[in-house]
Amino acid sequence: MKKLAVLLIVVLLLCSCNVSKNPEAEVSESSSEESSVLEVESESEPEKEPEGFSTPDYEDHSDLLTVLEVTEGTRIVYEITKTGEVIEKEIPNTLYYINFKDGTPAVDHPFYHYSESCYENLINTEPETWEHVCEIRGSYDGNYYIYLKNDEGFYEVYNADLKHEEEMGEFIKICRADGVGLKDKEGNILLSPAYTGGIYMPFADRIIAREGSPVAVECMRSYLFDTDMNLINKEYNAFVYLELEDGSYVGYAGCEGEFADFPCYDDNGELYEKGYWFVDKDGNKLSEKFEYIYENITYEEKEDGTSERIYHHSFIVKKEGSEEEIIPEETYAVKD
Image (tube, rainbow, N blue to C red; front, top):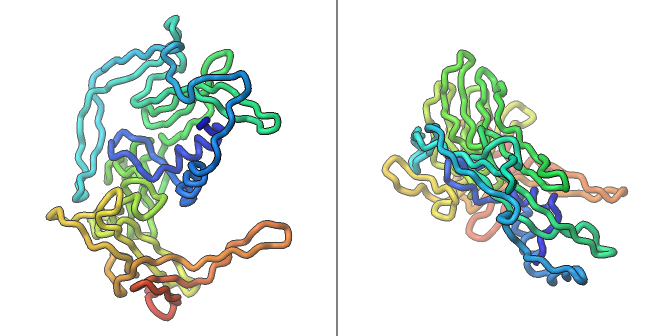
């Protein structure tokens, strides 16, 4: 089946749940609609090949490019063990320089990791029009890039610009394509840049660092710290905290057990129990176990054809096959 438009390809790249456990893998974000998109695509009729036009669906640039592999010293990468320990590793600093056959650079920098391909892109349905696309994508020095080829060479179409720093409360986030970390304003590293799912503060005195992708509960593993960087809780794949109108908050957390891409383990390497619970800011359970918990949100169609999100300030929980609506102010809300 021919490849879809470049925009969709970029979206699907960002929407992959399966984040590599390689600490050098790029960060990805996702949409819960991906599985349905892929399912519909697989069931649809094959697209017709343009009349009089034939080319492989997918090919590399072997007739166009050469790749020079150079190792220059070493570099530091980070790995998180299954029990949550961050390990610093020194690996060979292998760089990949992508050049045209005549030796001139195809792009102006090397890559740590890269992929390159050519494919047919449907740009118009009536009349059916295709274009031959060649691309290079990969990561280098904390950023992620996508390049496309035109008659003049390869040009940059996407730069994640992930390598930067930003303030977060009394801390500074260290953001890179291969992980996010944290330092204080004096420059002392507090959390190594190993957390590919990002770092955020749900409260002024609590920090959540995530491994994996934040697209869905089963795609990540979460670590809850206080501001002295003491690890308080690592029992869940994901935490969600919401502030209520009266100043209280409600929190819930979920663990997908062995079904998660990043299963949660205790210090002895044993899996934590699968389930969802309402929790406080330290991850302490406030409720019985549920099969799942989600915020009660519906969509209301408007006269102009658009839809509006309606927040019902309640939650839907499932237990033993039946669903129930939970009002947080009446049940699991916490006054901090």
